[in-house]
Image 1 (tube, rainbow, N blue to C red):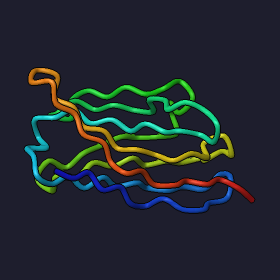
Image 2: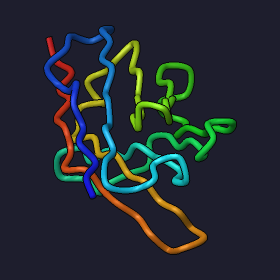
Image 3: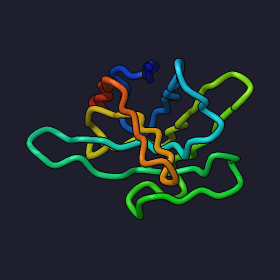
Image 4: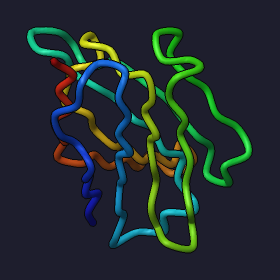
Length: 117
């Protein structure tokens, strides 16, 4: 079982990044997917969540209107499009998949996003 994030990096304020989360070893389409982040010296926080079918999403207030979560179940991949990035978006971003009905969840290893001029 694996969740592998990619797409992080260094970007200037106002810029954009697209994170990807590639799933393998489990039936991705049965799992809700979320993106969390952990800023330096702070606790991990929920950024965005999408249902297993992709029909519903929700976002942290701090990213509403700037970030978009999506998924392609045919490709076993989830995405987080991040626009209008701010220095306070700097964090390690983690992909998370969970299936509440059976009590299973998986985490990726994280990808660093740094927003700085």
